[in-house]
Length: 336
Image (tube, one colour):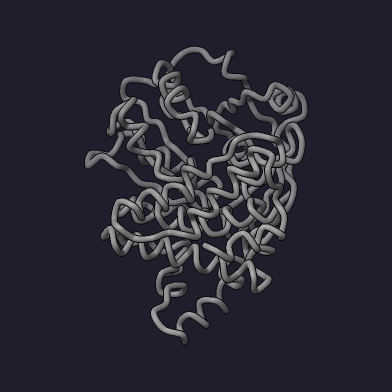
């Protein structure tokens, strides 16, 4: 069986290191030649809440050849039309493409490779690429978990193998309501990744000060409201019912929600959003697939999303060089 991680940046490198550490042959593929060369010569160096170095097999996309049974997709979603079409040529007829991407990417991918060849996976931990070959794990070791699901009624024959591979790193929850799982991850990303990118800070720093925490709370509330309007049941995250904890319909519940936000995110407090990392490198972000997806669904179900709309606007202005990620951007939410 041939297995690869396509788009092995910070998350993919750490996942690949864990899987390789258990003696499984998995290929790490990344277009960053310096990163690939460092992986080849020095191995995958994991720092942060865990520290180890693991020899891995690494290639650039140009060096790919042959057919794969399992491909883990960890690139940015905005490149999917081009990337998935390319990967289709390397995927076995009964192979499976597992997307770890943010947002709601499964249906777009299925339109290219077929529903029966797509699995979705959400990741409940974070990492940062510090330098070529060096990735910092920013979540606590006991928070390393995944949620895995299929969009087709008939699961791929490789479903159990994918689950076994992920279990070499952490806990895997198999989700029957995978759309609800996607939205639970999207809620976290819209609120914490969105504000991390806008303010230029970690998740914990966004959740701490009252001014930014109020915006985080409003972003969460908008996600819950659009899901309720659209008939989507948001699934728990790592055993925690985030709707019960964070939703509110009166002042008492609102105060509790506000109080619990920093506690709910504490195991991921050091996490810096991948959108912020992209902004720091001058790259386009996935904001349209994250906060933009919330706004788009809100329009579809007739539910206003002014805070998510504003996050999209601010991040696009940062991409264009009109703003920079900083706490002064708080004031831009006053009219939302």
